[in-house]
Each structure stands twice: as structure tokens, then as C-alpha cells.
Amino acid sequence: MVRYSFLVVYIVYMLLKNMKQLFNQTMLDPRLSYKKQMTLVYEQPKVFLEGCIGISGSVVTIHQPEPIPQGPVLYVHSRLRLAELALIAGYIEEPAGFIANPKVFRLPFIGQWLDRMDVISGGNSEKVYENVTKQLEKGQSLILSLDGTIDPVELAVRYQLPLVMVETKGTEHLQKGSFFKRLKPADIELSFSKAYIPANEKQLRA
Image (cartoon, rainbow, N blue to C red; front, side):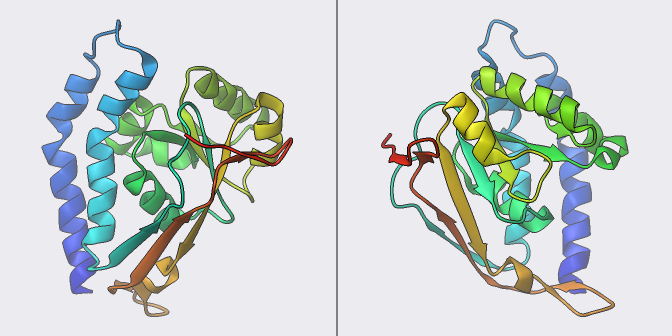
């Protein structure tokens, strides 16, 4: 319960602290490339997501056998929940977009940050697919789930994109209690497979 209280305080503090930062992000030089803009926009959210994991007192171990290829990459998790999304988005080096529940965009301030981060609103599958392809064309990597509305393997084959399978262990131990949930320290592992294009199963090197 104490860690949950710290988490709530941390979230409120970070939201208030970054209100000015959000305004500054809307004033980015339009001459910058989309990838450079997203790198700047994602700086604070990545710190925020890492902090949400860190405040639990957990230790995160990262396994990455090879460097991730340059250019847009599809990071794919078997079942992407909030904890896994925060872990992946917070700890990968480059900014990567993702699909979020439309209801989250209605939240004050958080919705504005998601819009600025170009996060894709879930819902209509055709609209989601259209927004996904637009981001890929701009060079933005994405975090997808195998049980989501978009088939990442089909997407990788169609656009000849490298796919990196991501496995997480220990996130299920972050919460304790069946009724009153509370945070607890956990040993978390974040593992990235070698990148490959599913069409020919060819391993890629950066």
C-alpha cells in the first residue's frame, strides 16, 4: 500500500512538473525530421515510465544478444499489458509508438501527452492499421502485441520490416493481494530476440 501511495504521488508530481514541458513540445521546430521530433517528445515519457517501474523497488535485467537494426522495427510481445508496455517503452533506446485504449485519451493532460507522442488510438481496426502504416512510413518503430488488433507478423512481411520478439518475466509479481492491490519489488527480466524479417527468416545485424 505504501508503494502504491508513492506511485500516486510520483505520477501527480511528474504530471505537474511536465506541464510546461508539454507546451514546449508543441513548439518544436517543424524543420526537424519526424524521428528527431519523436526522440525529443519521448524523453520525458521514457523517464516517467522507467520511474513507475523503479518506484516499486524492482531490479530490471536486460538481455539483448545483438544491437537492434536501424530504421523502423516492430517490437512484439505475446500479451502486452500496462506493466509490459511501460517496461518496454521505458527501457528501449529509441522512441517507439504503440496502440492505447481510446478511453485513456480522455484523461486530462495524459491524453494531451499521448496525442503529442503520436500514440495510436485503438478501436476501428481499419483506422488503426492506417495510422500504423503512416508511422512506419515516417520511420517510427512500434510496440505491438500478438493478441492485438494488428497482426505484427503480417505487417512485417508486407513491409519487409525487422521484427524483434520481446519477452518479459517477473512483471506479474509487481502486484500483491487479490482485493487491495499493492506494489512489491520483483526481479524483472526484459529479453530481446535477434531481429528478423518473417518472410525469409533472415537474421539481421545492425
